[in-house]
Length: 249
Ligand code: MF3
Ligand code: CO
Image (cartoon, rainbow, N blue to C red; front, side):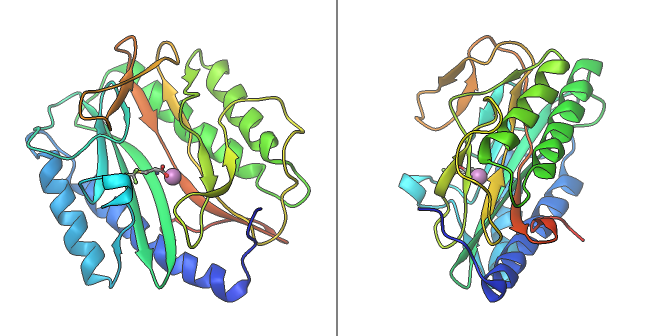
């Protein structure tokens, strides 16, 4: 069952996601050579608690940190630690908060200093694919119209969509129905209705789509060592079109 949210609930979800957006914006401004992923996690914790919220990830199935930081070939769920970023790295930062009973969830991939032309293309194509998907988050479309739009854009640039992780409904739980894959034929799955909130989150690999999970049982990396990018917004379907709840403005 897909839970549709009313106006007041959407307004609360906007507040939750605005906290997420402000944290991502701040962390993005801190990304530079020599900072550690653990320092980014501590800054996120400080901002989230100051805003009167809690991390939406800490303790989720035992997840040990406040945010996820996934560097280079890491796709998602990288655990912040003492790793120092280096010039030329890319870092995907995923932030989730729980605020007044509702979750906010968004992610962004940042370049560390100057990065390769290939990395720049990967970031651009993945970010564009997110917005192609968001364009389909409208009343009357079906879930897989989002999926197909994302996949089409990614593959037109020669990159691969990750299959092992998907987007999701979000609300009073971090993960609600429906699943929102980043691949598939259009015209399938549930019809979108006003009040649905979807976390749309393409994860895109520069080479093949294969995934391997590290010994820590969280960090997902590309099977072939290629780079990976991840952009995510929480988006409400409304009568007047998609409302990107996790946009900064
Ligand atoms: N944005 C990711 C998701 O929605 C982050 C989950 S990380 C976890 O699945 F730590 F909470 F698992
Ligand atoms: Co998510």
